[in-house]
Image (cartoon, rainbow, N blue to C red; front, top):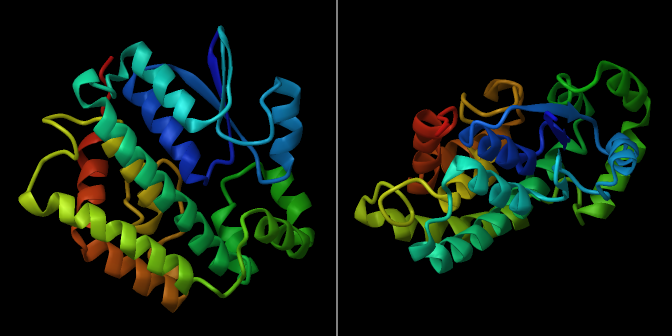
Length: 246
């Protein structure tokens, strides 16, 4: 049985799952759908309401954390036991970055439907056609679900910067990896969930080029790219995003 990854393809949590599966060398088929449409396909698979979800011979995994653990047991080698507590702590911080990154992005996208159309252009064409007349309703629903107020990105920038301060401090000694002497789930989680903030060219989804984003988004992305954490994420993408341990 080929693994099936149910996703919203531009989701950074789905990027986290893709990276882990590819690092383990696990073949999979990605079934990507737009928000709201994904509920139907998840329900058919018994996967709950969120993505990513992974359909495996052993059952359905319903979030990116479980998918990383699955990939680890199949060769990804992401959780060295001697660093388990440190990795868990850093994963939790990365997850907080992921939540604020999503809110930051939606606070811009939900008021710029032309840009939103570009962001989703690699999703299912039928779903794109069905969704575009209802972008207003979609924006309202996503805003409510993720507690996002369109145009109020500064709050999330502040939270992101506070978390990046912590990673900047950790990286001040020039370490190659966040924990120990090799790539772990801490590195993968930070890079995948923070990647949307620096737009690395190796990212697993083709976002619009930087010049297509509004001035405020470009300014934030440029600032984050220049910080130690941003440079570290870009380096991880360059050297590890398409590296398999299989």
